[in-house]
Length: 308
Ligand SMILES: [Fe+2]
Image (cartoon, rainbow, N blue to C red; front, side, top):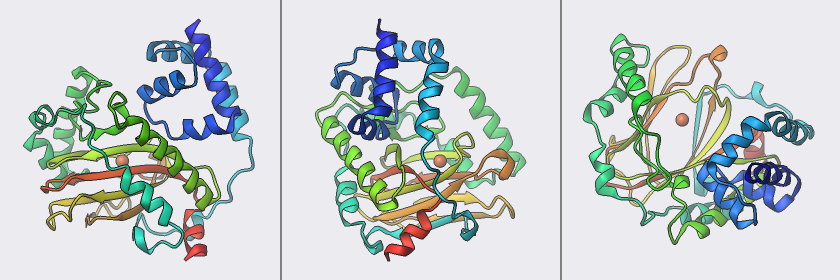
């Protein structure tokens, strides 16, 4: 009956305001199972996957009815750049959000940093120096893509192990003493941001980048739309050692943005038809970096200007 239990949980998650808010803070299957358990639902990750196949139609109908709410007015024509960085302290009305974000910067005891360090690959880090439009990159990228098909998926306990994503996904680590408080903060963040932007906001990932970590070149093309990332460090990284890099989709020029603590970054993920947004993140500094991602409405810019 657990498959049915997942379907019920999914329906309730879209009907019940509190559960729906909590569901918006979930980014991994491990978190979905844990949230279900807390609410008295009984299903495993395997049950959830089986339910998605068995009840695909019903689940799609639940999502369709939730999306039937009035659409958010588009502000896309006012946006010309690809990336916008702000200091979190400069955004009017972001005080409570900044306070919650500071507390999200956890280092779960379930993570084995020595094992994590062993997965570091100098040649993979080097690929971030290449242009995604170059032939040399294509060769390395093919090798990485092929090797990913034979590598194990990140396990629930580790939150790392994928060659192209050498960082720790906090949302895959749900069995440690700080998890429950961390999750409740995520829920509060989603509520505060939905209020700020006056639109639906969803958590897209809680990531911890210890020293010598990276996210190699990628496009996120399957999830187009605006993202907001709150980026922070435990101490200011050495200049040039920690950066966000992207390729201008039109000119193919590489743009490197050195990072500092207390940053809020907006950028738009494009689908293949619009010209891919290739980007990568490197923390080759001795500092720890965290980033918390959110799917934000297209109207984010007008909201930000209205309030400042
Ligand atoms: Fe990304």
